[in-house]
Amino acid sequence: MSGEESNLQKALTEKEKIERLLENLENLKVKGLVSAEDYIRIKAGYDKLIYDANEAIIQIKETIGKQIKLEDTNINLFTQILENQEIRFKKGELIKAEFKKERKNVQEELQKSEKNKSTLQRLVNANNVSDLSAETVKSRTGSFKQDLLSSDSNTISSKKKTFVVIGGFIVIITLILGGVFFLWQGQWVNEVSQPGETQGIDATGTPAYVVTQSLQLLSNGQYDRVTNLFVDTYTEQPLSEEKKASTIVSLEQNLKQNNFKIIDIQILQTSKINDNRYLVSGTYSYSSRDSFGVTAHNTRNFSYTVIKMNGQWRIVYPERGWW
Image (cartoon, rainbow, N blue to C red; front, top):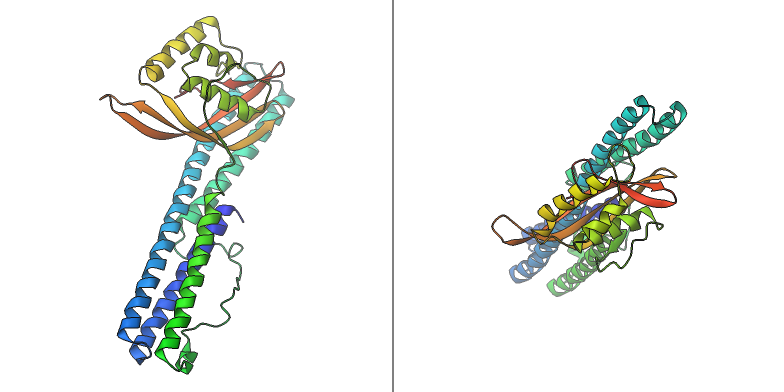
């Protein structure tokens, strides 16, 4: 079970548990086992817990929604890689054995992304625990060994005792929900980097590091240096001087003039296609000026193909541009 599935299941379970407690509180009121004053106070506590649970569910689903967009980007990129491989094979750049091996690896990654997207979409569509798959939902037993507000509640001898015990359940549920929020906070991001001044280009590290480094160079406006990390979209060879020059001009027009600055970088997934080819996916937030000169903050998903050339990692220049 993924972190998102686990957190969503916990949040939905707690919400449904509180809703049952609220329903039983209504039954106590009808039976006259709780005063109007206590009823109002206890109900307000339950309403607050249900609100908090709904907020947790919304936040978890927003996180899952971002991952769905990332998988969409991966699916599109893997599809493009398959098309490019077909072209390279027909042009004689890949021998048949190499073509079949690389194609098989990419198809496996494509199927994995499609499966991940399907799973994530199911989670987004889930409105209660029963909407989750049978293998996901496991019987969970906690410290609630009997329901306070069951038919046995009439054994409570006084309204004061009723309020104290129910209040205790409110505290316990609050702690549980707090734990859900805490667990959810750290599940998503696998790697976070803050952009800063880059003194040199080190293309011998990991594919993820090279992607992070290139984004830092872009943020710092070092376009002449970042183009040294690029290879051509189709030939996968270093950019020609003419291509470098046109790319630098394009970057200056689209990024520098709009005061483009990356705020943070999150590498979410690194998929191995083969020993010399990886797909690095993630997201970065940035600020830039719009057409009215107003600075705005946005977030962008990315998936870049990274290949090894002469022992160094290079980024296949995105067909639709870098930004």
